Each structure stands twice: as structure tokens, then as C-alpha cells.
Amino acid sequence: MKAQISTEYLIILGVAIAAIMPAGYFFYQYSSASNDQTIRGQVETIGKEILVNAESVYGLAEGSLVSLDVKYPDTIKDIYILNFKELIIKYELSTGITESVFFSKVALSGNKTYPRLAIEPPVVLPLENSTFEYTEDPKGKKTIRFESKTSYVLITTQ
Image (cartoon, rainbow, N blue to C red; front, side, top):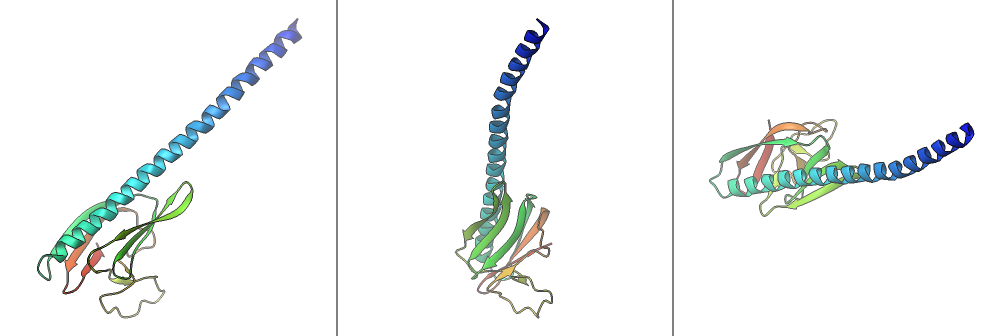
């Protein structure tokens, strides 16, 4: 009789575990996807804010300055500008590293060459491929500064 009760108990325990394991897996997948969506939304907002500020300061007189306070998510790995017009934000999701590309209507330039070099050559602005981040791990709160130049917008961080 005791053996039968033990066997029934083990069967009930096995069925309960068999029901809980898939539920836990689906919950983990859902929360991971939800986190990825949040990060994508933050990156999208940051990219659009950078372009809106750059394009608006370009329309002002040369030498005009605008500052923008942003908080980068911890998953942002790199931010750089290619061909004067493409702002690229590289970040990490649960599926791996991905990039968001934002196209500017005005020429953009950072104050550092991209890719980063061990010994930085003398900088002659504007830079076709540049970055405005000083570190290779740009996360946390930053102040981005936009300065209108004759034919481009200089972007720097403080």
C-alpha cells in the first residue's frame, strides 16, 4: 500500500513538473522579447533625437549650439557616423549584436576618427567617418552637443 502511494505521488509530481517547465520557458522567452523591444525603442528614440537636434541646429546661424541630455541603455556598444549622413548605433539584444541606422538630411561629423585608432592623428574637420563618443563603451547619462558649422554639424559629447 505504501509503495502504491509513493508511486502515485511520483506520478503527480512528474506531471506537475512537466506542466511547469514549459510555462517557465515561455515566460522567459516572453520577458526576453519584451526587454528587446524596450531596448529597440530606446535606441530608436535616441537616434531620432540626435537627428532632429542636428538638423534643427544646422538651420540656425553658423556657430549655434544646442545640447541634448540622453541616457544610453547599458546594451549600447558603439555610436558612429559614416559618409557624413549615416548615424549608426550598435547595441546588443538577447539574439546578439545589431545596428540601427538613421539617415540625416544634413552632413554630420564627430570629433574623433572612426574606427578608433590607438594613436589619434591630427583631426581635420569634418570627418567623413567619425564618432563623438570618447569611450568604446558609451552607456549611461551623456550630454550631446551640436554645433552648426558652414557645411555640416559637429557633434561632441561632454
